[in-house]
Length: 264
Ligand SMILES: [Zn+2]
Ligand SMILES: [Zn+2]
Image (tube, rainbow, N blue to C red; front, side, top):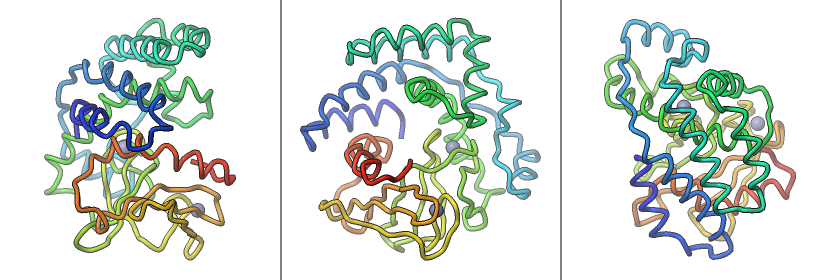
């Protein structure tokens, strides 16, 4: 799914949970900023990609990450402005955040630090993830289109994204098989994973789930690592879904999970 498709989906579905409308409007403003960025389709080096994947490493290495840092820094600033417009109470904080990435060099340093998962301020992380998304998603799309010959979804089965190394923040149970696919929180790439294991720590038999009352939408939570995963059972939905859009429309589930003491 592209940001433009997700944007249209969100605009159409807004109002499904009226209590989330303000939050959804904020994401709509961020998606509008994201969808204005044009990213060239990256070239996948097949030999290198094959070697990394066979060794259990993701395709992208953070130290090597080469993207248009000037375009990234510009998007970072427009996202700060979009959020400040829709959530004026945060405007001062966003000014401080935008100052962190005022040059392409500073933006690149900040992005690399965040991708190496050094814990950071939630607002900075939010802006960074959104600013990185079009660039990482271009890799995920190029990879999804071109990697079939050398990447087998059936052999990866790891808890991190084969493209960017990110963690999942959403899962689906597939219509035909009921098999579980994870969705990357950074680039939206989807890959298969065991249904019986925790998608974060790999523990078996530790996943409890509580339906949130909407049938197809479930929250799995691990008793061992205390992390949770939103899951959509596509077998229970007649309509098609846009997964990046559903990630936003189900923010109420994140709130419920955090209130119950679970971590994203
Ligand atoms: Zn990814
Ligand atoms: Zn776990």
